[in-house]
Amino acid sequence: GAVLKTGNSVRDFRAESIVKLPTALTPPPRINLSLPLAVMELMRLGNHSLPSAAREDLRDFLMHCSEWIELAPNDQVEMFGAAHRADLLHRFRPIHAYLNTVAETENFFPDIESVARPRPIPYMDATAQALAQMTPAVLAKLRDETARVFIETLRGRAGFG
Image 1 (tube, rainbow, N blue to C red):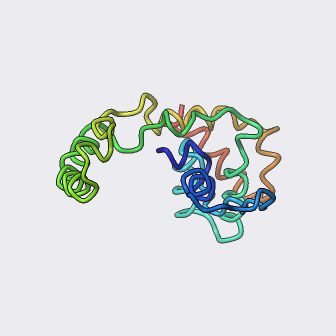
Image 2 (image 1 turned 45 degrees about the vertical axis):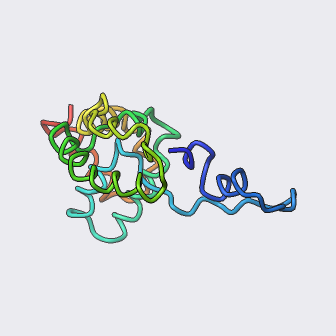
């Protein structure tokens, strides 16, 4: 969490390191870009249904669609569900105990219990909200016609709003 709050691991290293670094260093670009969670399901479905070129255009469109539509923030989108989150916490407890021992602390992850709390927006709701905003004007930014028709078809499908 702390690394993400500072922006990335390079900024975190600079902030936490005792190394004297030149002040005019150019920060590296972010290379681990990922799809917004609200549109992850659209890409998953596209990966199964579209030819390669259409998938690439769809991915590019979805990576940038927050410029044209409002997406649910990633930290609000629930991808696992309460039962899976509870299981995740249960399975991670021994690892957390080990980390506490190695780091000689009582709470390596002070907010470890938060892992079990589902986020407020189920991912399918976030996907439906995103799809509802993908009007013809927005979809015009999606170059590949096959990908565009694919998204238009999803917009009309039951279960997506």
